Length: 89
Image (cartoon, rainbow, N blue to C red; front, side, top):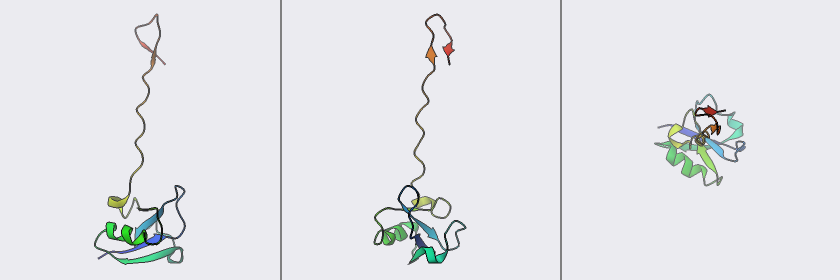
């Protein structure tokens, strides 16, 4: 069963990040709180929320619990010139 930690310092967006032990992106153990063993990252997130209100899983080791980036908005359609039938950049 994987062992999890949560970062003491929040990420730039304000979330504390949950990592599996051995993740190459996990900070030094002194910079994390141990969360113990959990069958999945969901249990580790629940335990981390006992310490911090905003938590998420690491993209690299807890992808199932990582919210992912926000989708980019659809690009705007190019403007049409009144005297042309082709899109005008």
